[in-house]
Length: 378
Length: 146
Image 1 (cartoon, each protein chain N blue to C red):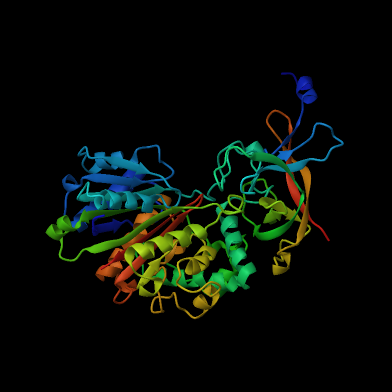
Image 2 (cartoon, rainbow over the protein chains, first blue to last red; image 1 turned 90 degrees about the vertical axis):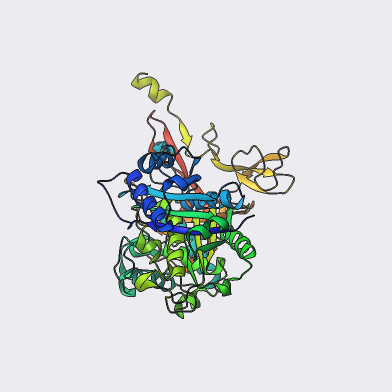
């Protein structure tokens, strides 16, 4: 496999854009990424475009028609919440295989005020939702957090503290949908959505787009003296487990991806400068501290109590404010969190900059399940 | 179809394929699944192959007991329109080695507690709605055993 450099990246501010369509949002992010890389669309040799809710709408080709339809291969990717990061991985593989020297990954989504994911569709007469348990995301991730409570005696406050941290971080991120501090009392007393997650412990839906330009090492040297490198790209699906699929297994799929990613990069979690992980709910972030090896099993409660994952702490997690603040436009998320890491490695993250960041990990999980982990280094 | 024939043909349909409602009203509805004789794994409903070991030749139907234990739960407040909330949404482990999602009644949704872990529950069935053809839609629900 060849070395892969990340030479350019960009995202738009996540939010709601009722006056634009998703192709315009994606094109905007992509043009910014190409400029950041110092190339034009004519130099791009392949494109991977991630979009979930319009996965049959040829978003990748439509972006090319918007910014320059050069006739190169375009692949449209859908992989639940890991859609964007799977597109990034397709672009990565295109370079790593030696087949191409310049590849573009785009992630985009327009959700508007979509509400609860999974609540629509199908024959509603025979929908089991709410009459035979729940398959909606707040309850599913509520149960995932409650499993940690069962094993280790974790309290609702532990999860709530994560929300306090991420919202505090977001104040410094101009790309975040919400940039409001939320004290612990506010988080705990917010409207309950699915216990133990209150409204402020759930990520918002919204619109967003992000893009990344990847190059072979030889090509990257022609454009920059200072690229960042994709040290690992791992993708896993959920292996058999006795409660799955009744209860989605968000842990094993992440643990397996983490092991592969650390092996590929030749590093361990202790070598990371920072992490952007998939905090779709506050409960999710806590269990992933352990799944990613940032702390030992059963130690996630103490980990947040000590302030370890704060910017300025031992291993900053979600310096961007995470999905809880940025929002989670599904297809955009996985590209955006890699771009965030790139900005930190370059020292371009403004007031939220993690000092002297050298290696960052970006984690995304899509239920059903898909997990991607990318490790990006200077 | 006239109103009368519709009512004559009205059926009690299970909401999921792994709930079976015997035609004889004296027989209780029950949950069923498939067991892989090669590796012992159990699945809800019918299978074409074993999702663990991939075996295609040794799946047999098993009758699942209607009693199990709460593994984990959430209390859902925000749900789809028209449903009662809050409600306790649990993952229930059945003794045959498979789990099922279920609403659990007999617990106070306002007071979620670690004491709920491992609680024994028993299945019952209930009509939850009428489908567009006028049939009863029957769901499996769970009640805490004291």
